[in-house]
Length: 210
Image (tube, rainbow, N blue to C red; front, side, top):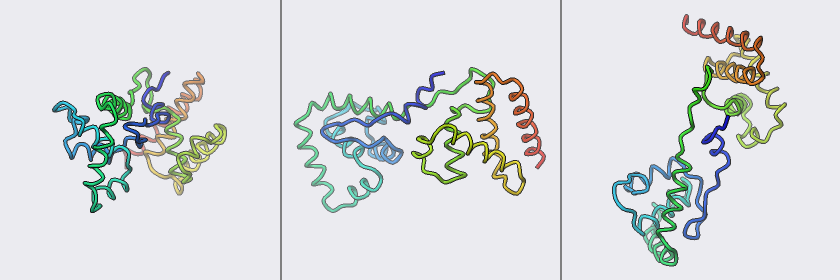
């Protein structure tokens, strides 16, 4: 199965537009563009050179950078200088690059309806969620972790949740079982599938009875 947007979210690299390396397109950048009625987001009017200059200024800064920019006394001097720099570029081409960049980061993950699974995300994302939550490793470290170690950590967490004292939430336990089920399905392990499905049904019944 090709995971499309799921995989792209890990591998995409922001481009250089008007000489500036953009940041990964984030919620604060989108909110800022929406707040200033940017046509890159609203699509309610044609894009102008000024729109490109402003979008580059926003998308080349993170949250702290945007706060410093908008609350700095010399904000408008910086915007004026960015506008001068923009005259050295073909702004229509740069606008196209910005559009591709924003669309790529706004791509919605596909929903997997191809089989009867209890979750839709790739199992690797569930593994990262579990390990980051349970062991507090940084996300990048988990993605780079040896696969057998990942599976050991997930199995340990799953075993711990079997103890009422250590159990850490219905949703997390369901995610762990869903991860095990998808792996069993990929391995065509019918016996494991039946066992995990029974555990899922029992967990749902316990949760509904509470």
